[in-house]
Amino acid sequence: DPVEIKMTGVNQVQVRPDVNLTFAKALRSILRQDPNIIMIGEIRDVETAEISIRASLTGHLVLSTIHTNDAIKTITRLLDMEIEPFLIASSLTGIVSQRLVRRLCTECSYEENPSPSEDVVFKKYGMEIEKVKRAKGCPSCNFKGYAGRVGIFEVLPITKVMQKLIAQNAPMIELEKQAKVDGMVPLLQSGLLKVKKGITTLEEVLKVASE
Image (cartoon, rainbow, N blue to C red):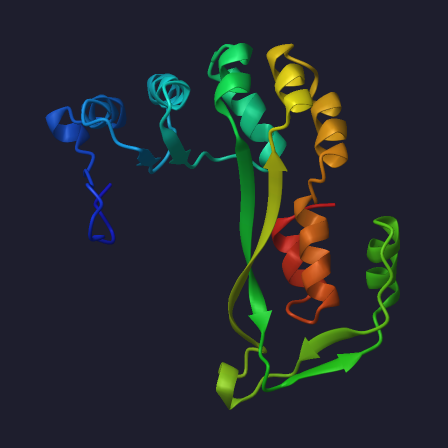
């Protein structure tokens, strides 16, 4: 876990389990410095999760990552770590799930009518699409048809109603319903919007976001 990019004005700590400097121990040390913002590379275990949540509850802005398939599953992952539901509800302010997809090359992309299977996917999510973009490959993209990457995002704001549901340990289906009420656009639909704009292809989106 090396410090990959050194940043001016940021106190960075390299985790060293070989000398017993774990995420949890480094985090405790950082809290004694009373920072305004804490960035934790990854919540990997119960101890790190508990300290992160308690840091959030004492007025610190805590940013971190956790491996889950989507935004809602972040909540269930923390519950699986045996974090109390009321602590999760009180400390979370928002969750962002993100994936990277390849961006179509702008030099060789072209428009055509969507295939029947593409039409089916868009209609399934209440969306219409008249044209899609594809790319044939050119010297600019090394004949791959794609150049660079772009993110697709699922943003879950933790509203008062969502807080209450989390604190009550509500089933996932209720959390998903409330997330939609609160305006969360699911990862797949976020990807479909980028397909509609001609930024990427449905094939790329389906690689990272299942139906």
